[in-house]
Length: 239
Image (cartoon, rainbow, N blue to C red; front, side, top):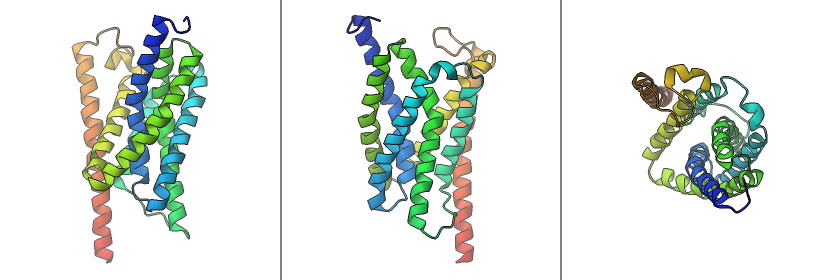
């Protein structure tokens, strides 16, 4: 691709749009993981989480050609992200530590990095695909995603603190992202249709996709609520 040609600029525009969409997922994970931290640690978690997200995405970007040859990668990533979404909604803070603040911070960072690694595969595939092999576009995309994730995380965190219901919405978004990764798995193309959007899926394949979307989102929301409610009931009985 010729540098600064019309095709190059269109590819850059596509990458910016992809970054805007994908940065939202990273921002939601970071905000939900950091929402229970003390105020003086929330900003540190947001900045550290953003750096981790970009670092993971950069490493995956340079390994994309190798990653594309791993069968079932998107399926495994989707299943792992379902577990992350459930944990964020369940708000499991039962772990004991001599330093609860430090334990909570590092637990939040672990959640952020794991989620970034799982979502990073899907994110990088989108950016690298839009770049059509132009390395400078991949680098520009990574650099542009830094302020997007940083600003998005801070914004979502403030909204979560003001409107707790957004936690459920964020969990639903992460669950839907996981479901889309699963149905986009090339190994399952006979069930859910083609991986790329240039070929229309059959009606039954489209229906199968929607079934997965609904089951995953509803399953994560209900199971997360049930786990959290059970923990609250246990605390009331002990108290």
